[in-house]
Image (tube, rainbow, N blue to C red; front, side, top):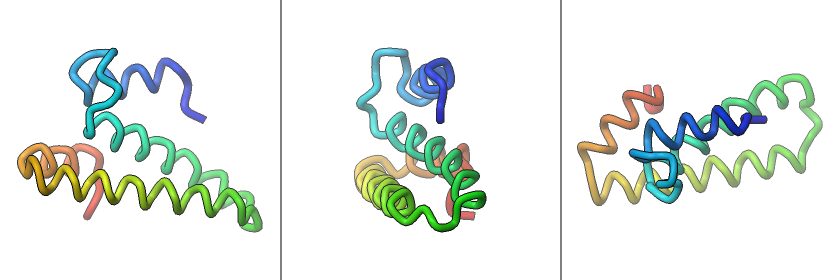
Length: 88
């Protein structure tokens, strides 16, 4: 679970300020943090199939947001991918 402070820090870093929660970069960064946090849970609980479905939905949502960002601002896309460590 991401704490309120961690969430606010991510939004400030990627959204520009603490109120810009709707920016594509901030949404992608928040989803990435949640996905990374949940991976630990699923290593300990491999039979949590309902949770796995939610994780896959988050991954799909992040993928769609990344595709949108790539189509509209390729430079921001490349910077975000490098910063978050996606697409090795």
